[in-house]
Length: 427
Image (tube, rainbow, N blue to C red; front, top):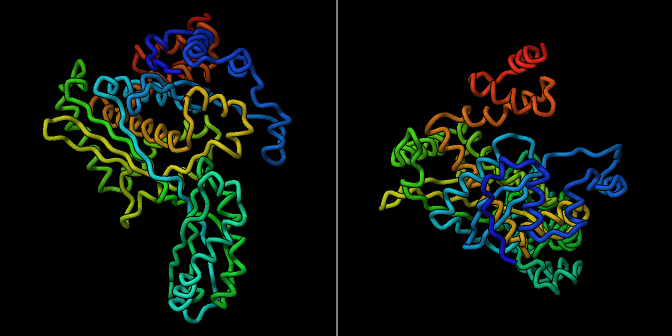
């Protein structure tokens, strides 16, 4: 089924009208529609089986970003997030990018690392070579624990052995199992394999195995997105496209050299990625951990994205980062809305999901940089945040939009001003 991801005038509709629009576009059935239109999509019984000490459920707004075109295919992007302006910025940038061919994405295979820590070794470099000599035996032991994964073409493919000859606890040898986890995020799989090989590793090295755990720095499981936008598409009422591009490049250069700026710059990227990860039931903490560790891979914390000017003057943005996501296992299977999100996305592999996520992250980054390079981040953000402020001040029904409009018109978006406007109107 081919979807048109354009959502003209979507913001002007009420939630029921928006839902009806997405139901028609994504081909949702009555049961799936009910999950989105009624409370209790996640039954308490299911929630109780997912984590410990459950007493209730916590809801987030669930939205759809439109206009995304990825590798020539239109994609509606579900996002679960509480922060205003995130969905709007992603959709607006996707609309701009759509006019120049959309996002081009690619990804590596779904390779994850498990780490096995070996202590109490006097000859760590000798132990390293001994382990490499038994490489195939170790791989075979690891693969004996998951025949289903082997049947799908995955499994442990290789090992690496890292030596830390001087640590406060003496020499350490760290064995990495390199595992193709297919369409799973892979944590349980690689942890099981790490535990399976521990005894044999002790026999080979004469050392003692301590930790046996995955690494969230999934630097062999990368997803990439690229966009190229002509200056004409970036023009606004007050700024020429070339001026906008120069501003974006200057903002990027700041993030590339300064970790204080890079932290906020990369948070903006994750503003787009995390809501997709949450909406699909994936582990956003793992994605965040890998992203920020990857941003330090050159010895200092820097921007995850890059922005350049092509020879013809176009703006070119790229994003490459670890993306350990899955379609099977965990909340992706147990949470009803996670399954529904995957249906709306119309994806079949974890790599496709990874590529959607980085495309949204790049769109969000572009939106933030464009705002910073022109009128500043607060103008658009506070206009969208005004509704939250009005609600917090006690506005209900039609008063919410009216108070929000009055605050935006006055360029004064504050809780006390919202309360004052409400008090005046009621008087």
